[in-house]
Image (cartoon, rainbow over all chains, first blue to last red; front, top):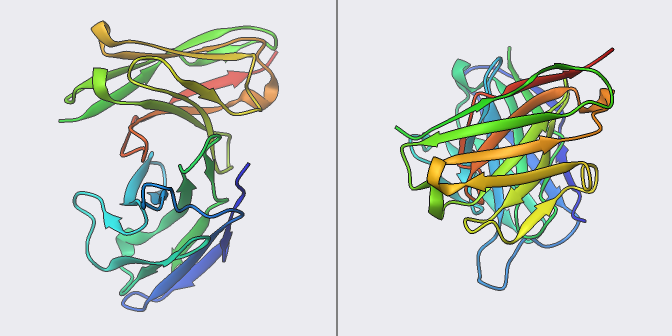
Length: 112
Length: 115
C-alpha cells in the first residue's frame, strides 16, 4: 500500500506571505498513462473537503492561480504565493494511482 | 448544480448496522465512479471504498473489508454504504465523493457508535 506523508503538520503564515506544503509518497504516483495521480484538498473549518488541484498540477474550477504545485514521482509541493485569510484550514494530499487510495495526514494552515 | 447529499447516519450500538445513502444530482451519475471517505472526530480523512460506474470493480480499505459493502443504483442516482458489525472506532462523519479525483463531496452524515 502507498503511504502518504506531509510536512509540516501545521504552519502559521502572515497574510500576503507565501506558504509551502510538502507531500511525499512511498511509491511513484506516475501512471503508465503518463498522468500523475496526486490531488490536493482543502478542508475549511466546519466544512467538507473540497478539491483544489487534480492530477498533479490542474487547478479545479474556481481555484485561484495563487495555488500552484510542483514535483514529480514521489515528492510534491503545494505552494500558495500569497496567503489570504480564506486559505485557513487543513490541506490533504491524496493518491489515486492504485488501490487502496490513501490520504496524507493533513497540514493545518493558520493565519498569524 | 452538482450535488451529493448523504443520509442515514445516526446513533447505533456496537455490533449494529446502518445503511448510508448518497443522493446525486446535477451530473450524469451512471458514468461516474464514486467513493466513500470518513473522518473520525478530530482526525484526518480515511478512504473507505470505491465503486465503478457499472458496479464492477469495487475496492475497499483493509480496515473495513468484510464489514462494509458499497453499492449503487444508477436508475435512482444513488450510492449506498452498508455498514455491519459497527465498532466504536467507526464513529465518524461519512462522505461520498464523485469521480477518481473526488472532485465533489457531500456534506457528510454522522455515525456514532456507542452503547
